[in-house]
Image (cartoon, rainbow over all chains, first blue to last red; front, side, top):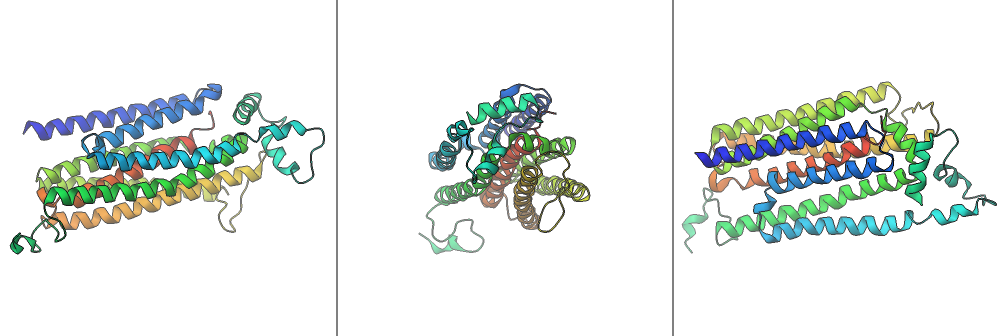
Length: 131
Length: 220
């Protein structure tokens, strides 16, 4: 009877770890860490994902083929994000033409460019994201 | 190969030689299905990412309108349902019928609680004119009503599709519970519980990402 209880204990530890990570990510969001807020939240979500996949989904005991299928879905997700973001994250160069904004692109630029009534902090993050 | 083992009482389906082979095939199929789900949600997450890069300040302001307390509670509720689901799988494998039923019921209960809380949040957004779906009004006095509207549309689309997955999961759990009551899901018959568990945990992981992206980007 020790094995089933060992399982319960392990799952309970993982659950408590997940709750602690939840508390950590909520607490971190209440502080202004500048551009580091998002990377921190994403890192915590990654650790939570890993805990759920390895322990609750038993991926650490799974067959190699199942792990390969799980890894493949992440690979395809990475391709999707890399190719699209390689476009959107490298569009900042056309904002240098501020002197003579073309008619058609004006609307889009006002969205991308920092506005005077936004807080300075947000502007900073925005520029660093689009730079 | 005797035909006697291929009766309805056998856990082994006709097309497989032995149980490990059947389990391997089922597990791989489930992971491939989850791969298609990753791509399905991936498109939504990507749309969110692109629009957030373009409208960071407006998205942060809109995110502050979401209820952080309910969002946090709901995350804890969903993580709890993953715990009971993992325990249910273990109860099925160790032939514990009583606990299997209890834990399936607990998972359903926590899943339903999640949906109920989500419903409360939706109603609150509707009452405050922050549900810009179809012809519903969108009331936004701060700057950038356009991008803020976009945030709320993404919020309802992403959490809505996630909630739909939860409802499907709850329906499957109900089916499992009825089967478990007849003692059909333990030991070598426990594969359906394991597969449902994989699906349920996947839906949990989707929320683990939705929560920070929707609720926590506003630096409150």
